[in-house]
Length: 307
Image (cartoon, rainbow, N blue to C red; front, top):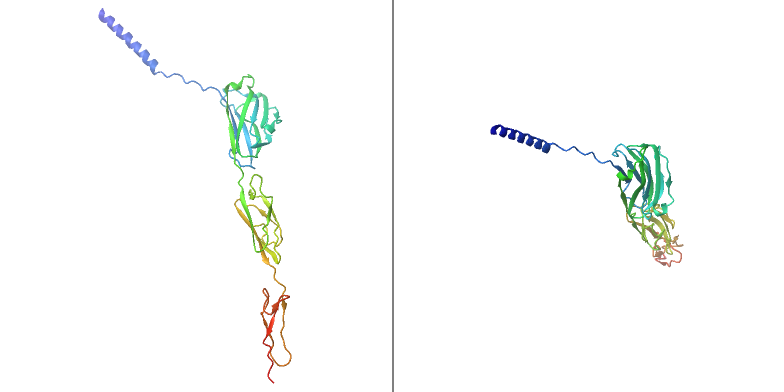
């Protein structure tokens, strides 16, 4: 009798152990991912240079929203107006949506936009593309917020599952390059106008800046023979232009002395003897036998024949 009771106890214990082991090794069911509406702010260039133009796209992705469709939204985009200057909006509201864009606060760096579609939109929806001019250097946050955002049909509050990826741009100043103005010969250095490009110090310019040169005045007895480093190096005028390259640059005007007016001197004799000889043989700047007005000339060697 005791043996039978012992067998029964052992069998019950084995069953209990099997139940416990099955429970221990059975995996828990994987929990489904929570629904999410992902919104991204994407600038076309995150490191622009002053003078560039960029676009900023806002995208609402409903792919992981649990089967919901985007029904309506109201959004606000803010930026630093000292860095970015608003130009225009495209694609807002997107096709199939009705809505309005409020640009009355662009001077302070803010636009508000909205859209609604009764049947909703699924997948990825670009709700706005804004164009900006980069007018200043530094960092500019692109801050996006929504209030409200609802699902189509159910009118569920999508703000509860909203995830926004913000962005910023870091704008660099336009490079400035030094311009040096010189001359050779006797005269004045040319003068540049404007004196600098916007955002550059005096005497410095951005690449592509067109600069006018004036004031190239030779001293008395000198003239402009040519230029170097200009748009018209063969010019003999007192003005010229430069298109600034993307590097430091030098432009110069060349002055040369004005050639003197030379007159031919003919030496001869009558009778029997030799022609006189002139000294010097010529004036400075003149060929042999030619002299400038006022040149003092010594004559020697006039020797008469004997008899």
